Length: 81
Image 1: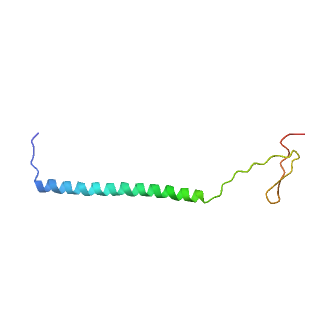
Image 2 (image 1 turned 45 degrees about the vertical axis):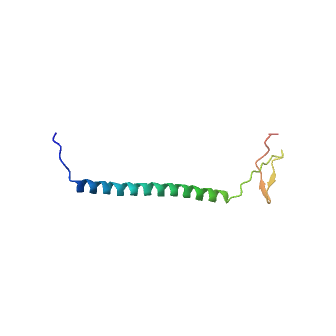
Image 3 (image 1 turned 90 degrees about the horizontal axis):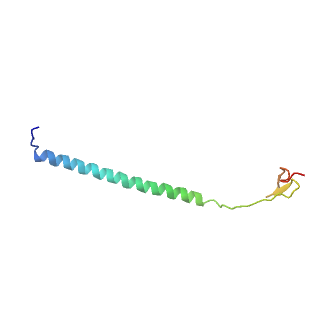
C-alpha cells in the first residue's frame, strides 16, 4: 500500500470541523444533564405540594362505620357473627 501525502490545509480543515463537532456534542450533553435535573426537580416540587397523611380505620364489629364528614361505609363486620 502506497502512502499518499495530504496537504496541510486539508488536514487543518478536517481538524477544525472535528473540533466544532465535539463542541456541539459537549453542549448537547450539558443541556441534557441540565434538563434531566430540571425535570426531576419539577416532579419533586409537584409531589411535595400534596399533604400526605396516613389514617387508619377500625371496624366496630357492627358493620356500620362513619368515616369523615358523614360518609357512611357499610361493608359488614370484619368478624362474621
